[in-house]
Image 1 (tube, rainbow, N blue to C red):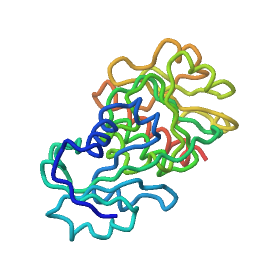
Image 2 (cartoon, rainbow, N blue to C red):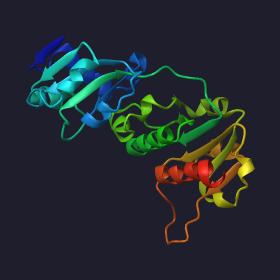
Image 3 (cartoon, helix red, strand yellow):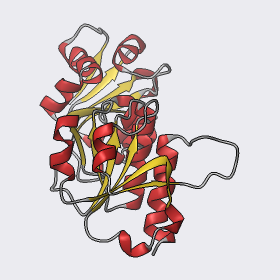
Image 4 (cartoon, one colour):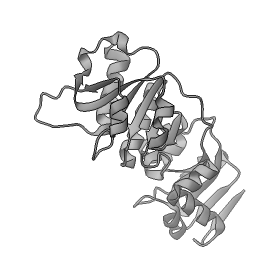
Length: 252
């Protein structure tokens, strides 16, 4: 069904706004808001789109999205601004159901106190690009916020992501050999490749404070990337991406 929405006070608009602002509501409904033409176009075939919202002036441009679901809403500009988290609304967004949680696999990314949704999305996008890695978010910003979903380019629908508290971290990392990234660790390129076998995790700490004491104590090995240049550290998402690709390819 296609309908036209001119008021930002309707129940559908309020529902989308709450999904954008309330992480608990997203978890309860198992829904996220996906913004932007490219991310929506790249949604995996297996995900379920609940509703689509399109700016009236871009109705023809985005008409190919009409077939994604039965609930298509054509909106005026004031409505689109009300439901978009972007400074400049892209003109199309979708409410999408998250895939069901799977059992954790043998390779695990542990994010320890990541607070920037852009970094969060970048890590999830990297995990999706590599395949075979699950993501465990310990006391982090929401992995399902519109900004994180946008930065992750829809990787949230391709990767098993679990959000937990610090008190639960030991339970979900039990049985994994933990390699924790830190500037004072052992050069990752000096580690023997056969150490990365069985169940193992690569962990990185938050942007401001690094690894928590709890995770640092549980780590089996502290590792680092060589930085011969005059810099103290790398961005958390960048250092993790380089390490993951090193583990996957350089150490094979």
